[in-house]
Image (cartoon, rainbow, N blue to C red):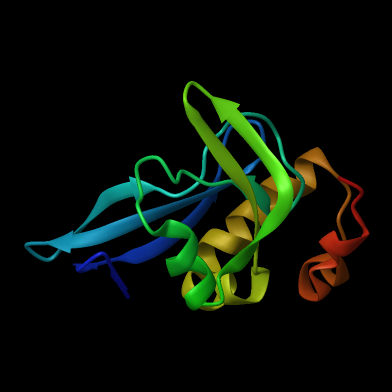
Length: 131
């Protein structure tokens, strides 16, 4: 994938509080290295929802939406300092295609915090959550 003229991969994981963690990595001299955090860890969000770091990642919303990785949740954001970070609904199936091991690890962690069934993940039933 190309993000702002950089070859990047997307890695999925979780924060210590169980929230979804998504980051860019890149290859340097054949080794995978951290490039930038995509998500922020302000507070726990449910399932495939989290705030995204538009402050350090110009054009991030367009990149994520153009690659069907998810969509902005309209009218939901959190302010930190001078920046308003939008809430983003990540597409579980696309993340799974990109990083199946990371998605499995995240879902295993989620299962320790909440009771989710396999169907909840496969059907991406976040629509039922009230924000």
